[in-house]
Amino acid sequence: MELFTPRLTLREFRDADFSLFRELEAHPATYYYESACPDEPAAQKYLENAQMDALQTPRIRYRFAMTIRPVDSVCGRITLSLMNPSIREWEIGWALHPDWWGRGLATEAAFRVLEFAFHELGVHRVVAFSHAQNTASLRVMQKLGMRQEGLLRETRQWQGGWANEVVYAILEREFIPGPA
Ligand SMILES: CC(C)(COP(=O)(O)OP(=O)(O)OC[C@H]1O[C@@H](n2cnc3c(N)ncnc32)[C@H](O)[C@@H]1OP(=O)(O)O)[C@@H](O)C(=O)NCCC(=O)NCCS
Image 1 (cartoon, rainbow, N blue to C red):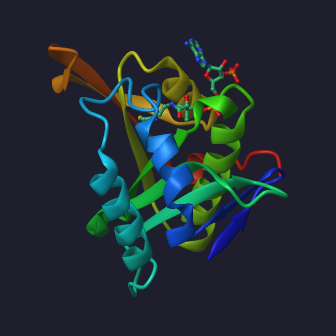
Image 2: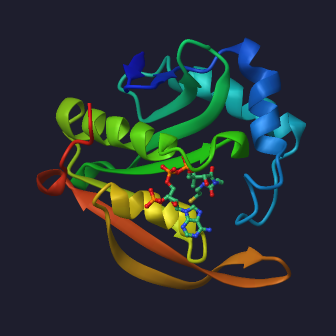
């Protein structure tokens, strides 16, 4: 399946995406706020799992490759995963190659994925987790209209110590679609 935004196509991953996807995953800035950077087999596994997810019915995870039209090359990923079926709660997450940061692309992609979640999947709540100091990611959450619901203390091992994590969420009734 594919979703479109003014600048982006969000599509399923393919085998041919491996080298660019690996470039995104291996970039130190992509994983700066995480405890570890995935190695090559982990990136390969991610692509395989992404393609398996696409075959499931009903789907419980969408791992979209972000591409900037008219080029079909992967520059990021955005994921929507079922967290708690009983309350129709899903989790969203994103990463973009640093060459493309600061142009509003992650926000643009995430607005479209939230619209898909709320208007097409009938989702009730979408949550997102982030390292508490990951300002760019927090800013994306805020621009989407998500609200901070919690601060999880020392839930991440980071740079030889502990880091706090924040939880943001948005409800179906709160969602206002972004610019089309
Ligand atoms: C988080 C990420 C996807 C944002 O991508 P992006 O396309 O640059 O995001 P946008 O341009 O849509 O929005 C970023 C916002 O953060 C702001 N921002 C970026 N870095 C910032 C910083 N260091 N301090 C304060 N604000 C910052 C930008 O100014 C922008 O806000 P604005 O529109 O109000 O000016 C990207 O930084 C990334 O891939 N990071 C690495 C992976 C990651 O951390 N993923 C999230 C895991 S929870």
